[in-house]
Length: 179
Image (cartoon, rainbow, N blue to C red):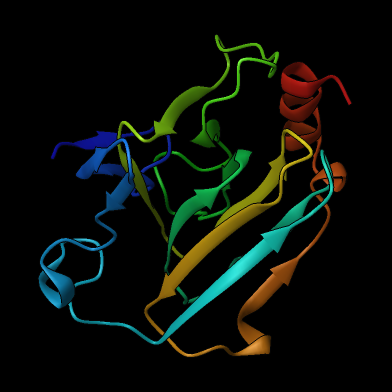
């Protein structure tokens, strides 16, 4: 599968294979296992994040060293990203993408956000260190996100703040979901 480049340097999306029929679907999470170009044999933690309230943020942080790979398994979520790497060519750039299950009732400004839906593909999102990430459920259905990290959890590696505290993220969210 091809790797989709985003406007943020190093933030990548890979659409992995899906096999399915009327009984259900099999989503490839990490083709080639430790040899997967996003994982590269460096798994420090695997966890699941669940969001249960529409338009209420989950995440809302970046890491100094940790690299994360995300998969939106259920529900539909708006993901916002911002580059906080001072030495990056894309420093301060933002990016929005909708991931998960397609829902015809979602009304977004898709000129400002990309979208990749299940079951057409399983989006594998590589988030470099110092790239802020937050997601918002877009429906009342629970959103479940699987994450794979390159390092074990370290509370001192987090920089946490509400997306409302950043003018660029606040404006992007308002443009997309009006809140």
